Length: 467
Image (tube, rainbow, N blue to C red):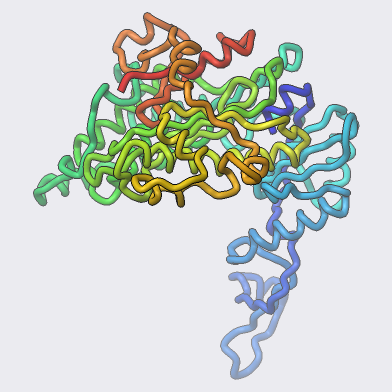
């Protein structure tokens, strides 16, 4: 939604509902004990032979297991009464109207982002919500869920970052005065189960380390605005049960990397197209413990990432083609969902979505509707409705290119291999490269220092990194 707003110059404001969980009406019959002191306040006499007096709840209350669902049903019903319709792809995104009257509401529990081309439309929506709920009008969207929003409507750029949250992580783990690192992980580092503590003494030492808290803190950052630490967090999260010193040191290195890059975020350039582009790649057998491959997928809008993922595949691929094919399948599914969401919010895609994939075997397998003896076992990985060829092609709206390796190199040669070199800052001071799968790298720029000026510049965010 933020990418669409930057492209179309839409105003974005926010509000939240005070004591939201108290508005829902319960369907179940629920009783509760009286809070201490309430009996005396209400001058209730305890009946003879009864231990206590209880009260029946008529409305929802904080602490009930169904409180959040009851609230969601309540706000959903009210927004629908105001003419909003939930998106098919995401029921927490609501839309109403077209053209100048178009309005989009994004709901996260009791926090709302409201976007429209006219401030009067936003004001009327807030007034409609305030008729039933007590709300806190926070004005123009600047900070929500720990994410800072920097919106320049004149330049049509919208940046998101988590500087304050990043600083809290640095302080929490005592790295304020540490030496900053240029990369999230050491080049070529391998984290395996062999690094787990083997003796009781080593295990006792590691119990004092808040490893789970470290990984959880980094994971929220990686999922929010920092895809550059996605690979590191994915590797660290494999050792939550029995982390070793090497794993802890690797996690602290990520924090030291954040010390130098806390201003880094994502910038959407509204002057670029809202045409969806996707990239898929694999680090074959990247998990040294069980030889599972790492899938890396990236979806771009307005020259910046909107979806990114670096995950281990569920099964062991017998070849690089099979691994790439499985990653391509996941990428296609993300594209199908994203196209549905963009259609729901009024940014319907024209033509097919291009997925860049550098494995010719996987591309040939995806396009060929026939079966071969060596590849027949791989066909299940790509959804039938997403394959090219025949009637199935029109249902997918997805094309793939067999020559993306050259495209990735040409568009991003200026930042190629930066993530793997110690002199990264000298070669490109405002860029930070990341690996999503061991093959695809993305450069993020500091919000205040860089605004893309052309489609070519935006495409240069993607580079082929050496393995």
